[in-house]
Image 1 (cartoon, rainbow, N blue to C red):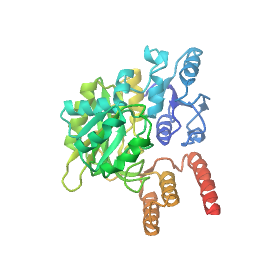
Image 2 (cartoon, rainbow, N blue to C red; image 1 turned 180 degrees about the vertical axis):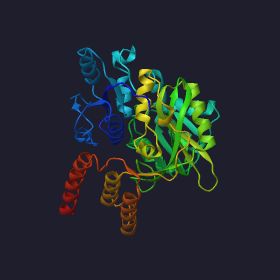
Image 3 (cartoon, rainbow, N blue to C red; image 1 turned 90 degrees about the vertical axis):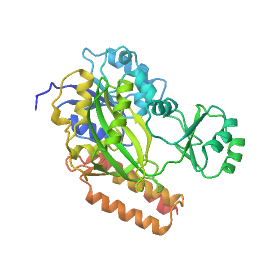
Image 4 (cartoon, rainbow, N blue to C red; image 1 turned 45 degrees about the vertical axis):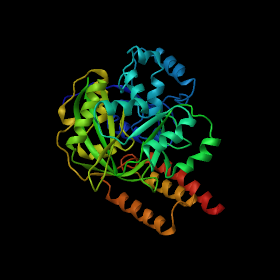
Amino acid sequence: MTKLPVQKILILGNHRNALTVARQLGRRHQVILGRAGGPGRVERSRFVTDVLPLPEADSDGFADALESWLQSLTEAPVLFPVGDTELFALCRVPSVLVGKVPSVMPAAEIVTRCLDKSALVSLAEELQIPQASFRKVKRLSELQSAVREVGCPCIIKSDHQLSLAFGKKSFHVGDPEELNELVATAPEPEHGLIVQALATGRRHNVYFAADQGRLTGAMEARVLRTDIFDGSGFTVESESVPLNDSLREYTERLVEELEFHGIGNTQFLIDQQYGKISFLEISPRMGAAFAVTVPCGFDFSQAGLNLATGIPFDEEILPRDYPAGRRVAWITGDINGLVNAVRSREISTSQAGTWLWRAIRSAFAADVHATWSWQDPRPTLAILSGRLGKLWQFVTSS
């Protein structure tokens, strides 16, 4: 492997995927965390050398604070955002917009386009990528008509990645009559809404790297379970599977059309019975569960760093062939999801028992954990400490 120059990297976003980035890059680079105290407890990692106390990424002061810090340096670091909020926030930082400071993300206009769900469903339609039928609405008064056109069951979602629809990322509608009271009492949405037919199947993520619109490496993972019993929500267990030819082709179409440069992931649903594919989104970052790529031999963190800085990288960090059946587990998210489901009485006692058994089984069967590592245990121990404290409060107050 070619010896690469040591870089100073500022990770933005204290999420669990930031731990994967820190562990992959911290062995040979200097890693700084942009904010402590987030849910990932990444500041506790032995691979993080320093913490920069920045405001929240969605606050008004974030862009000014980061720009001020960057201007005070003689040599700028490489910025590595790991969440949608951080990506969107960087699109307002002058040094990033003019290309003065390298960032592990596509150009700002591509980030904005990827976070615009309305633009994405239109793009998928234009590129003839299969997806569930949809209608776009701007006002609540248009909603019932759109639901009738699409048919039930369907989902309603905001047309912007950082916004919610009626308090949820995906609001399920089983009957048009359910909307009557909602439409009468809900405020007008901040963004537009998309009404889309309900697609079924397992979620499949294609993690990829692209160089100026050309796919240079990709692998696929199938989501096995999430932190919500119905299968929506955040991934708590997934496994690598052979790259589906159709998913690769659709990802290539999107990457080429967007002239995507950097690392990201596409998401699809695949119906297990009929094999029907439904496009969900393309994200300008690595997904939260991209740790599953590590035991498959991929180093997407280094690939993203090299693409951002223009340094060629060895092909071995993005292998063409990789093993199937490698699993990742997120045990803290799994237990947290179980506690929330029990607390809100969304599941029965038997379902809770099944969930707990699956969580224990996945913890032992995993090839890699989203947060836990024997070589770097402190972040997970800090997370568990906080979770156990909340669990104890729940038990004693019940």
